[in-house]
Image (cartoon, rainbow, N blue to C red; front, side, top):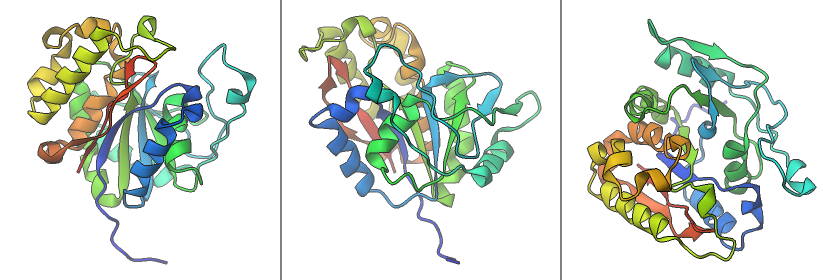
Length: 260
């Protein structure tokens, strides 16, 4: 049994894409190169745009079927498997860090990984041999999510990779199969890049009012919300954050960042 001290892991926010991400000629290789440059995690904690549940919920701690939470796609996307081990020890650590008077934590033991979790993991850790735990977002309030991330931050020193999985811009009406980038998406992406570089947490927390066309880039905020968990978990490394992936996919900004 190894007694090596786990490497301190960064915190990530990534744009996860839809199931057809796997067929993109560029994006899967970008995700694979990113994971190859990381220390090997002891476990992965996923916060996905596609699971809102209050009180905060812990998903399966055993290997259960995936959640194919999308409709109208070709059949082969519903055959994708990602049988990662469960992470019961991580779940217990999360309970201890988050549970407090007035802040309950619930368990939903049959809730598998949704596509916001498994789609990027298939590309980043295809062997599916690292334990994964998904937790819900109990709110879309940026300040509360930032605080959840802060409380989860000690897990990084245990080798846990904390991943907020969303999409840097997300307006389905702006999707462009020919790759044309609407000006709203480009302007919001540039604003977000600059706010992150300036470490302007206040602006990011108030993005709906302070970003150009914030409510058009995110008509509903669930895909930007996981960023705040990552920012909280990686706040100590905000000054060294970097965009590992940028550019656009079908007109949406796929900016993805690393803290630490």
